[in-house]
Image 1: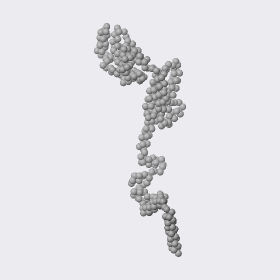
Image 2 (image 1 turned 60 degrees about the vertical axis):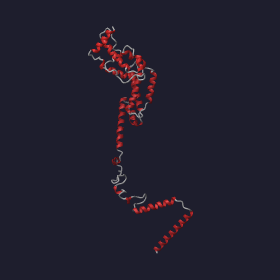
Image 3 (image 1 turned 180 degrees about the vertical axis):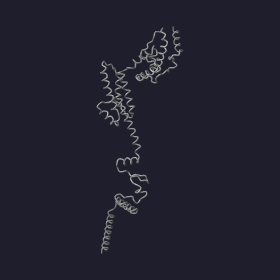
Image 4 (image 1 turned 60 degrees about the horizontal axis):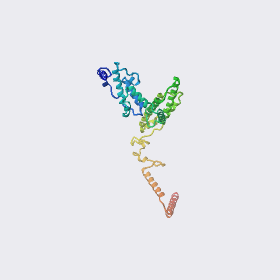
Length: 333
């Protein structure tokens, strides 16, 4: 009997049908089940199996025919291929738990019972805690929204969503997604306060996809404006902006290329026009004398004089004043 079944399987391999195993890869997903990632693993593996036309083998829609049925050999070949996909996508310790299962459907259901809703209440608590504590931080808007969306999808998987009234269920889901919209908006950085206020001031909050699109557009706009502002921070751009806004334009010297004066008042070309603070322009010599006298006076102020020196200085000033008065009197006469 075993030899007969082997011949049937060999015949299925030798036929030109689409069930030839050499046309099908051994692995259909890069995600491996490790007891903690059942949701992402099952979703990825289900997509891979569906894309190869083998989904009924894990849903139970294609049960095994009798071994006397002519289709049994084809079914056994295709079911074995799905079993290979499942075994190759789980960790080594999990492989030992399902290796002896007779069908791919048995493997799939066993893994779902073991890891699909394992510690469901605790996992729901962990997911919700992660959702409420998640903030944008250094993430982009797209990355932040994707992180939230992943947690929401995992939470929906663990929730026992069995409603007797469809309309009540629809209202509940609508309220739930509004709450999730608030979570998304609340987790954004402060720089999005403007768009956040605009959304919250609407009479009716848009759907979360529309809200995400608006915030993501605002992020792109801010990035473009940041580039423009950094490029426009040069002195020439500043002068141009000042002239457009009606402000007094900043003068630029065509000789030294510095701001604040024109070439007519450039000290490099006209050193005699260099001003002393609080005094009118004077010749270079006068400025030098003035600077020298100021330096001497400050030096005198800073130096410490004895009382005798002070008396001598006062007497000298008194004699000098008397001499000037006598000279003035003589000239007047």
